[in-house]
Amino acid sequence: MPSILFSPIRLGGVELENRIVVAPMCQYSAADGCAMDWHLAHLGMLANSGAGLVIVEATHVERHGRITHGCMGLYSDESEAALKRIIDFCRRAGRAKLGIQLAHAGRKASVQRPWEGGGPLKPGQDPWPTIGPSALPFGPGWPTPREMVADDFACVRSAFATAAQRAVRIGFDAIELHMAHGYLAHSFMSPISNQRTDQYGGSAENRIRFPREIAEAVRQVVPHTIALGARITGSDWLDGGLTAADAVFCAKTLKAAGLDYVDISSGGISPEARTPTTLGYNVDIAEQVRAIGIATRAVGLIVTAQQAEAIVSEGKADMVALARAILDDPHWAWHAARTLGTDIKRPKQYLRSAPSLWPGAAMVG
Ligand SMILES: Cc1cc2nc3c(=O)[nH]c(=O)nc-3n(C[C@H](O)[C@H](O)[C@H](O)COP(=O)(O)O)c2cc1C
Image (cartoon, rainbow, N blue to C red; front, side, top):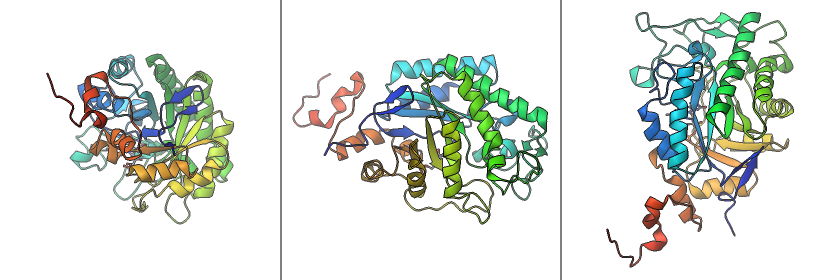
């Protein structure tokens, strides 16, 4: 039977060659939001990984929305030009479609790079004030965010729309809103972090209001030739937090706002949340979300070709995203194709690496 994993899929106006997606992965290697040579090497390699779509790491819509001093941004002409250089290079180097994750870190901003400790920035490390739905810190020892007021809502909405316009100019095929992992949009949706009593807090409709406004503002400036999606929370993995039913509600709301797909991730709202460590831990939630009729991607410990093939062929998700497994083996998709009895288009410079050419093939030159 032909592989479903290696069959094409259409997201809005964009067709992907296959259903393997490189998940967004922060590299903490930017300078004031600007992509550097590391991103040329990293994203250039992934553009050639055989995945149908590569999503550029969380790229923040304002300077204070970055997680760390090394995070990417799309809030200045300089950061736009720096990212355009990388994306133009990826187009020349590889065949993957290219997406970008637009993000605002909210109360989880102003932290050290993971290899510097990953905790909140200390005095002397140039920390900055954070914002959130309520004045509730992420955890003990974390700074208390300022509760957002009307001007903040307007600024963040417009920052998302402006960054999306920059992403359109750069030439991305897909734009993905980061609405998971405890960052700003997720922190509005979760009752753990949102204790507001105005129209942005309380009921599920109120808690999703601001994320929905962001989605609508971005959809207005992103043409339908570009796929627009969101990474959302399948579960907070905490009593009193978001559940699969909330993910279904969120996907319905975002679909109505004009989004083309959702990616189901989970966790990150509190240091106490314990994300499962079982294979494909978000897949069952993705299946429930997919039932509403929106293209759905699952992520989280998807590691083997057979597992990925089963997820899409059994209709649990339309696509899979991989992060760590692809960092470990950037040609994961090439090897998955071989396992599943198919092949993948390789760059012409690497054609002689195709296993079908190995036996007896002369290695000349
Ligand atoms: C180095 C690294 C950086 C990450 N950065 C991001 C990010 O920028 N945005 C995001 O939504 N998730 C990020 N994640 C989470 C991954 O996209 C993914 O959801 C998670 O690692 C689970 O998938 P996996 O089991 O295939 O690694 C990151 C993960 C890693 C390992």
